Amino acid sequence: MSDYDYSQPGMYFVTLLTYQRQKMFCEIHDGKVSWSRFGSVAKDAWLDLSVYYSNLVLDEFCIMPDHLHAIIRLMEVCKGGSTDNSQRVMRTAETRPDDLKSLTEIIREYKSFTARKINAMRGTTGTPIWHRSYHDHIIRDEVELNQIRQYIIENPLKWELEKENPG
Image (cartoon, rainbow, N blue to C red; front, side, top):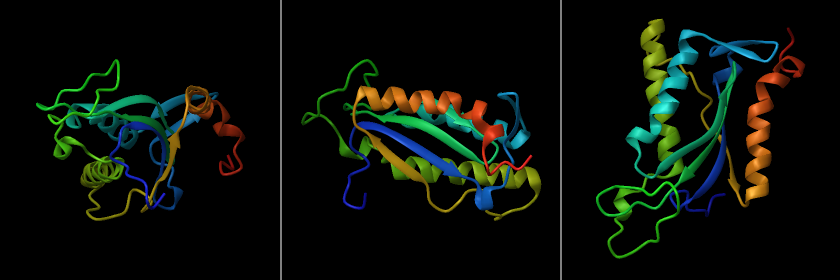
């Protein structure tokens, strides 16, 4: 949504696609994921995000051969950069807006980091790894959150049935 503030606290469902839907991250057989070295880069970098962003809490995610689905929770950040992961922290005069990273910034930096690392491994500096944009959805309630979690969990099981997977 063009007028939405993607730095405000909330739960977000995101989907990132590889450039031209290249199947580079893993293979899936019988619902089991077998990581490629590029998929390991994408997975490890994803898991490291909360180390670098004080307002980020990772939820369910899956990395597929040509895309990533994930739920991200952005939290309020208190002065000093700490977060309270068990409950949302109320914004006070002590909260510093410069501690907040928006969803857009987090995704941009993740894609940039993984693209540089994968390109270094392949010896293909500057080659696109990710589709330019990404899809996001603001999760509005617990029911929707649980439905999206289930969708993410079941995604590898459905891979072999997808029309886009002609194998």
